[in-house]
Structures are given as structure tokens and as C-alpha cells.
Image 1 (cartoon, rainbow, N blue to C red):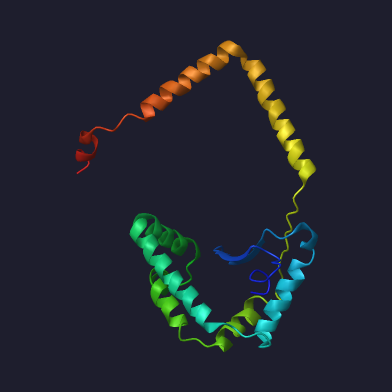
Image 2: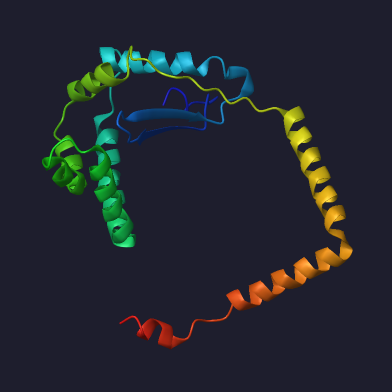
Length: 200
């Protein structure tokens, strides 16, 4: 709330994500930070997280509960929309990173695990911050936009396209366009019903 939901936001959003490796990577991204505040936002985020961990800033537990409930719905949506991919991801993750057989059951029971978190108090969440975030080594990456670099890249791309067109020549371009149109036409042909029925 102190960075986004204020009169003059420091960022348009804060996004948290996990990347599973042998060592899990936790990433917090501040989006669309004004250029003049790029050097300040890291300190602001650290101060807020330290305040939450120390109990100086209150955790909105109703919001935590809403996020957990949304997480449960996301898991169920993925299982319904893409069951093969979701289950395959669990198998692959288990194969790469599991330490014991019970790990796979835990992977497959995301909703149960998430719902168990609803019973946790703010002390639990403060403990997680202290254990995994506050004072731990981290990498800070700042992406600063450059109007001059953007113009340079656009100019280089324009020159590249012009050079490639010149190298191919008008006849070559016309032949490529004809090949493209033929490919599009083939791609738009409906698959015959027998293709699906032959798989049953």
C-alpha cells in the first residue's frame, strides 16, 4: 500500500514470484517506477519489509486470506484448463528436486497446503520474512529506460531490414511473399473430421 496505493505511486505494481531450482529463487519486482526514483525504491521496499518483520507495520490478514483463496482458485483453474501440463510439471519438478518420496504428495496437494496457511497468524508470516528475506543476500537489478538507446535500436533495425531487402532483391522478395501466402493458405485449411476420429 505504501508504494502503489498512494496519491503519487512509486510503482504501478509489486510482483512476487518463485523460481524452483536446487535453491529456490524469490523475486520481487517493482513495475513502472519513475526514472527519478529508481535509486530509492529498493531502500523503500527493504524498510517496509523490515517494519513488517519487526511488527512495526501491521499485516492485513484479511488480504492474506484473500490472496491464499485466489491461489487455491488458480491451482484448480490450471488443473482444469491444462491438466496434462500441470501434472507433468509436478512430475518434472519432483524428478529434479525431490529429497524424499513424500515430496511428490505435497506437490500434488497444493490446495491443501494453501488452505492450511489460512490458520496461520501474523507471527508466522513475520517469521518467514525474517528467515528468508530480511538480512539475506540478494541481487538488485535496475532497468533504466534509455530514449537514445531506443532510437538507436530502431535505427539499426531499419537499416538491417533495408540491407536484407536489397540483398534479396525485388524478385526474391516477390518469391518469398508468394511462399508466405501459400503457407498461410495451407495453414487455414480445416483438418478433416477423419483426423480426429482416427485417434479414438
